[in-house]
Length: 142
Image (tube, rainbow, N blue to C red; front, top):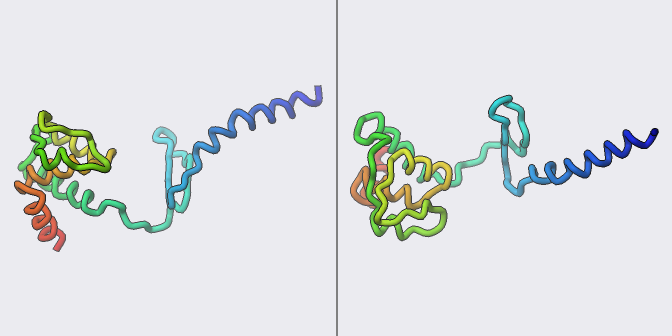
């Protein structure tokens, strides 16, 4: 009877060990919270200032949010996908030229998937081309 608590503890460690390992990350920094309780589930260099990985994507989102505020776009607007936008590799939403994608979905594609194609669709909708959008972003940043 003395060994039952030890066996229970050993079994719990064996069961929980893979879950604990799942919370390890090779990322430089991470913060994972339980949405409902606010409990920190994983923290790694959470207070360290780290520059964003995709500053141009953040600036694209800023320009989109301003266009939404100004009424130049709505979340329900459906935007066409150009051949140029479809041709992007890397992180994408896998859009094709037959798609007409809601602005709200494109925003999610940029935020969640870091979608290069979503950024291109938004840029083209706001400025006509990526080159013009880049000029507009630069002017806005100044």
